[in-house]
Image (cartoon, rainbow, N blue to C red; front, side):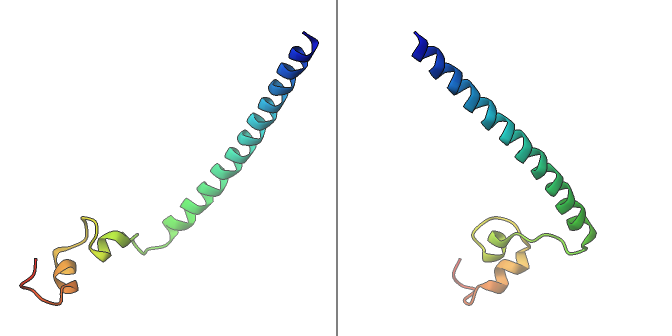
Length: 75
């Protein structure tokens, strides 16, 4: 019975340590995200969609898709 109690206590301690570490890392990540968002809002360049530029995902403008085709007869 003593071994079971020690094992469960050890698991609880490890769980609490991991929970505390995740809370600290999550708090720091939120701070960095806020700084990154502030820096991104300061720049005037609009974000681009690389998949739409390549033509593999919907998006972009119709002129983009016609400009990337070399033969207009192929769909």
